[in-house]
Length: 144
Image 1: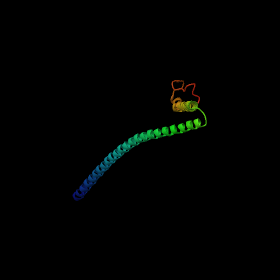
Image 2 (image 1 turned 45 degrees about the vertical axis):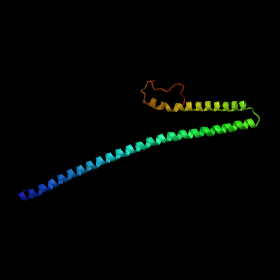
Image 3 (image 1 turned 90 degrees about the vertical axis):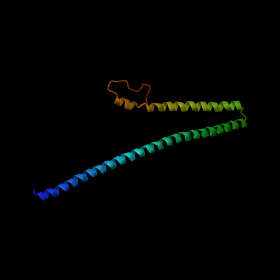
């Protein structure tokens, strides 16, 4: 190669390597900015989610208080109607109490039956080793 051609190629190669370094540096800077901004977004969303959960719990408790108050008024109205029909106050209270006790027992039993579905019995069976009875579902669990 002639001397002038070498001189012209050297600056071009230096320019190309410098631009590649600049591009890589710009790319790293952009990637770093993206990671930083994504992290800030995730933190902001986590704060919003935590605040929302707390507010949901508070509003749920307020709603429950209003529901209990409304239910109390309905029960008081039913008892007043039963007394107006000629039943004594104590008999009316006993009837309403028995109905509430029966409803409580039935709802409790239904809730306990639903508990069978949270044991992951099929998943535990699938993950257990053959012959290993550690994760086998209870004999009383027939839903599984």
